[in-house]
Amino acid sequence: MDQMVLGSQVYPYTTQTHSQCIIVNQIDGAPSGDGSKPVKRRRKRRSKGSSATNEDDVASIGALLRKRKVTDEQMNMLEYSFENEHKLESGRKEKIARELGLDPRQVAVWFQNRRARWKNKKLEEEYAKLKSQHDTVLLGQSHLESQVLILTEQLTEAQNEIQKLSERLVQETSTNSSSSSLSVEANYAPIEFEFAPVDTNYNIPFYMMDNNYLQNMEYWDGLYV
DNA sequence: TTGTGTTTTACGACCTCC
DNA sequence: GGAGGTCGTAAAACACAA
Image 1 (cartoon, helix red, strand yellow):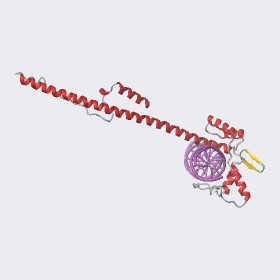
Image 2: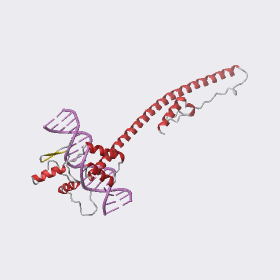
Image 3: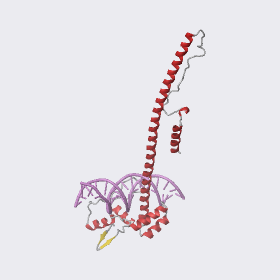
Image 4: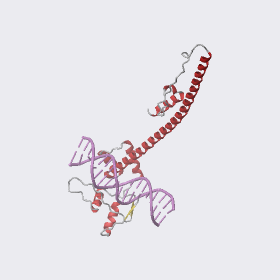
């Protein structure tokens, strides 16, 4: 519990008001300007160790600068209210402030900060979700790449096998023609096979889409629905 | 006890909406 | 123009390791 000692009494939290905050700012030398377009200017604050002109100033400024931390009960009520509605219209702000014994400005600031925390949390959650999806996609990519390697090897083996068969056929044909008086070349012309080039960009031809491949595609497609 | 990192409170500057 | 929003940040309060 945040406590503050004033005289002989101990207060659970200070009773600094918004107007008192403004007084502190004026003491700190932050005039509100001449009415022209406001110039972006960082508000100067009094640091813990800064000097003052007299002891009374030190005591009063110290008291005013003390933060008013909300109690657990006030926090619960504010959280409950925030759950219902993140925005805070004027009437509601006054009502909450009255019920909790807080300054309306304090309630407004609390909601502003609460919204900021909520937004940060949402961003973190969204980031975690996207990262998880990204990791899943990388895993899938790796899996597909290994599939391509395997299939490429199989294709090469098949091409070699066909090539051997083709050469054997040509050989047998020429042997038959030399031992026979009849020419059969026209009937046994060498077969020319034309293979599509292996595409490493995953443009897998339809005839290579086996059940496993199709199941994988369904799985990956499902991720993007 | 003290140094340091994190959370909370508060505010200035600026923007949007009515 | 005023009210209320976001954004960035200062400073107090708090937590905790060394």
